[in-house]
Structures are given as C-alpha cells and as structure tokens.
Image 1 (cartoon, rainbow, N blue to C red):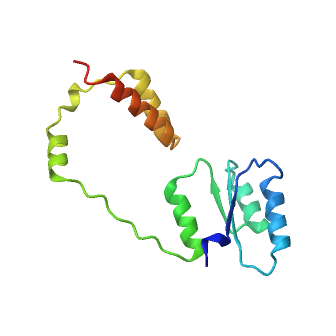
Image 2: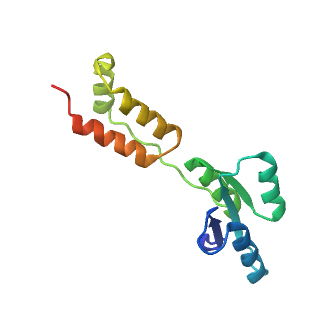
Image 3: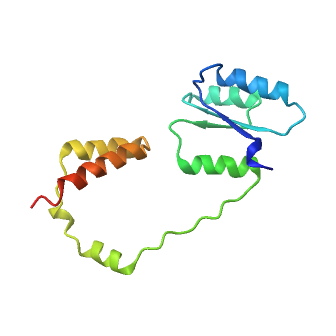
Length: 140
C-alpha cells in the first residue's frame, strides 16, 4: 500500500471537522482501501471505541509519542520500519563518565522548562531550554 493512501486528520480543521472529512473521504472513495487514523485530544476509552466503531482504522490520543505514530503506520500500512541504533563514540562516552555531574548547576526555571517540555514531548520546548543553557556558557 502506498503512503498516499493514508489520511490523518487534526481535530480542529478550518473548513470541516475530522469526522465530516472522514465521511467525505469514505463517500467519495468507497472502492479505495484508504486508511484513516484519528489523532485527537479525546482520550476517554469510550471515545476511542466510538472512533473505531465509526470506521477509523486506528486511534492515537494526544499528546502522542513518536513511536506510537510509527506503530500505527506499521500496522495500518502493513510495513516495517528498520531502525538504526545510534552509535556512541567511545571518546564521547569516556568524557561523559568523567564529568562531575554534582558540579553542574541549572536554574530551577530552566529545569522546570526542560521537565515540562519532556513530559509533553515538546521538541521545540526542549530546544528552547537547551539554547538558554548554551547562552549561559560554563558560568566561569
């Protein structure tokens, strides 16, 4: 199956909502095997069951994790992703092991920002916090 046969709808759409778009796709392409995945902030179990009963092929609640999207794509498109393990250079690992972690000081504000961004899977939030840390330098 081609990826072009996959539709994903945001819960808030400018012209119509995802449910209406879902029905229009099914109505306009009844002979096609189009996979439609519901991605929504609705996380209640009965809502998930309603979306599946309605005919969505899968359901992903927000905030979603990257691996959840990949799993849904693998399942619905009958594909398998090949993952490469990141290689850690021995010199990098050695320098990390030698680092005095107790001497590292992070302001409570930046620590909170990092934790909030990590908990909400916000790459942008993490990048912003890291930029703040980089701009602070080594403090000496």
